Length: 529
Ligand SMILES: NC(=O)C1=CN([C@@H]2O[C@H](COP(=O)(O)OP(=O)(O)OC[C@H]3O[C@@H](n4cnc5c(N)ncnc54)[C@H](O)[C@@H]3O)[C@@H](O)[C@H]2O)C=CC1
Ligand SMILES: O=C(O)C(=O)COP(=O)(O)O
Image (cartoon, rainbow, N blue to C red; front, side):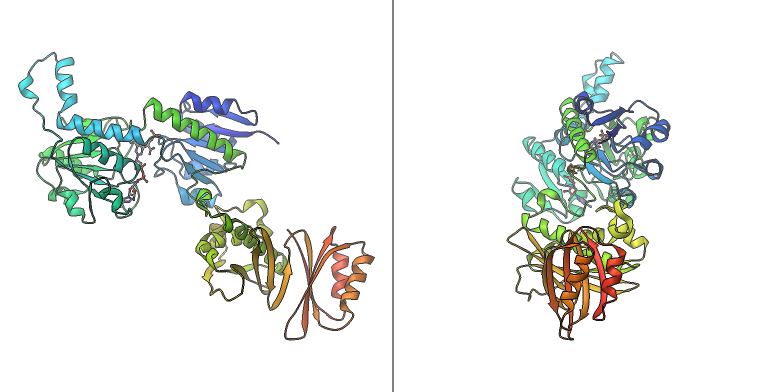
């Protein structure tokens, strides 16, 4: 197997680089010090996997060069600078490293909060740079008994809450996507009313940056806040509208702001830097030795696993979360992909629509079933170009309609999954189930009830149900030197039959022609899984 190339686009800890360097199956390029235009022009085209941080945008320009890239590992949490739909279209798996820098970001948030209430950097500079000893100029306020509003109560927000509790603050969390007990179990208030946050003395935000959260705090929200409010942002620039923030700080409505992140970074010319009521850091939320070491190790290991096609930990655009998938579902996903592939091979024509159905407990995973079935169908025409990440995008581009349906489970089986494929040549419906947790079976093809193990090379022979046909089929197989390893027959109510014949060896065109020439033959097709 040729070596896979991993390109490191931004600075990561040496321990991660060592892991990459010590893997004999990996070629690794450290391009962290390269200018971005050179990174894109020279190194990204070589990459099978890229490791990035917030300094490298995975945007149109990146994706245009990422012809070989199969995975991007974001060595951190936020993926707002990664074009996930664009990556998916290209079949690129996007992964992040979600919890390794949590504590670093939490502690920086507390640093900004304390620095703001004690105007710490200004007092520090006054003594250190100006050599002035004027204790009367530096009266701060205390965190104790102040009302803290936390927007976004995930990994970072909740831990900020725990630490603020130790400072005896009165805390309220706003996060519509959590169970309120996540806050109340910590003796922290929970609100669904954003106004409760705006009424706080100090507000800190810990949400991802997306269309819902950009500008969550703007001019109107600031107007409703207490005079002298303190705002902290160690999440992403733009969550607080920067113009409104600037205006509030300039007018004094906002007493202080602690800012680690900017809309556009690096931000060395930003007007916020001219104010004397901000504490600022250059996006240092994740920059502790502990966090960077953990992130780099995880990012390197995950990038190697992805490059080798072994695993995609923390993938954000795969249809399944590997570690959350119940064991009984896996064989159904495999089966429905096979059913999709079989359907496309049997019909061999331009696909118009894919209707995926599931009955029984497996139906809870209908979305994933849809993706796996689509991969199966499109593999017939697109081969390796199709994968779980880009399947539904590719289908959409080709105007293939995908529908998913939960069906009542009256089949007598615990679970049943099926694909109805409509192509320019007609429609085929195939359904299957899994016995004893592992044994995949095709149980229906159109109106025929069967019991077929979907593997190897299969011939699908549909005929009028007249005597002697099975003998004729067997004879033609023997004349063509093909050994039959399994023969299954289904009959329908219209006096027609379907034989599924598994054979050892290759099916030649002449054999299919001979079968088709039998008087009883209605249709013949073959497929290989
Ligand atoms: N400054 C830095 O260096 C760092 C910044 N970050 C930023 O912090 C963010 C949060 O990180 P984690 O806590 O690890 O993520 P997380 O996913 O554990 O938590 C985010 C929380 O925000 C909530 N949320 C989403 N939309 C919301 C909305 N509209 N209103 C209220 N809550 C909402 C979610 O329900 C979730 O509980 C990241 O997305 C990243 O952008 C993360 C690490 C370091
Ligand atoms: O993990 C995050 O979301 C961060 O903001 C940290 O970004 P960085 O890896 O320091 O560029």
